[in-house]
Amino acid sequence: MSARGMFSVVGTAVGGLIGWSDEPAPAADPADVRELFLRFGVRVGPEEADLAAVVARFQEHAGLAPDGVAGPETVHALVRYADQMSGLRGLAA
Image (cartoon, rainbow, N blue to C red; front, side):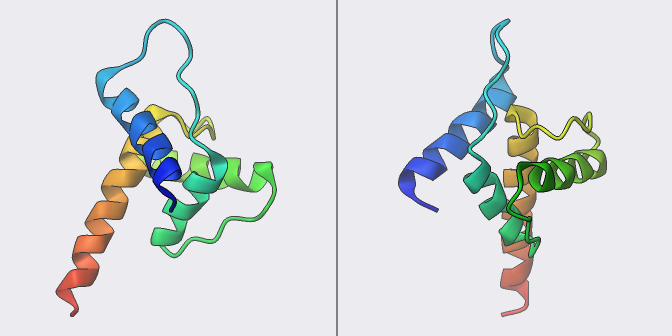
């Protein structure tokens, strides 16, 4: 992931932690969200609907409202799960 992409994801995740104003929170860049799913070994199809479907399934799994939009809370959960997966992979080494 590029540095710019990481800042986009981190910014969106931090927004999920601190909350946004009354304005709707921005969704994360779709390419960055796809890359986060790749950390789990989940390949997402090229269409926007493919990504929305995978995001909605992840949201259901994580106990979030399954709207299919990778907003701050969803990205925060994705990053948290990706970090946990990285730690588990380290145990096998």
